Length: 195
Image (cartoon, rainbow, N blue to C red; front, side, top):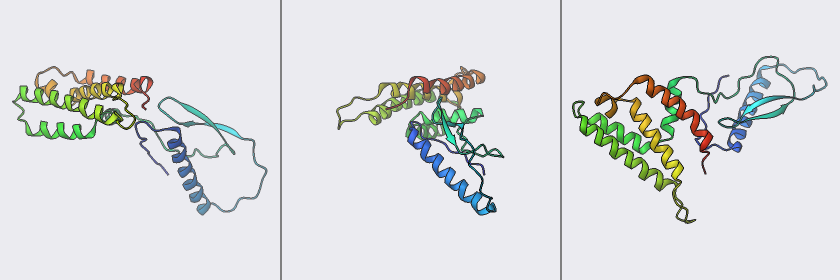
């Protein structure tokens, strides 16, 4: 059984543990249905296997015995450039992503200035939406400016890698965009955890 799970951007350790519990329960139910009853034997000494719990954290968890065959656990890894692009888009408010894509689809390809203005307008909307979404008026807390900056930089990188003002003005270099996505999505979890 192969299962791929995409965690929320700011997933907590409890979220990963609950996913793991559900997966282990489902796997135990499936193996109980297909396996004949085994003769009772003394329990082997516990060993530890690494468990993925965050962007760069590994927690060791004791388990009853080492499996004879490798067990399939939820894969929380990204392997392709497309996966990194998806991670990048998750840092940008989805409302603005949709708005930008519809706007670029409507603007004629020959209108380079209009595409550039549209990208700047959408960048302003990213700042506005993220600032509004991260403030807490009930507790009188200001916006999380780190999150606003991360979303803004992510939006600029994303716009750089898709058809838009950078391509229209001849400023886009495809491998630069790809490398920037890789580095940005790798580095962000190290300096921003979320609140």
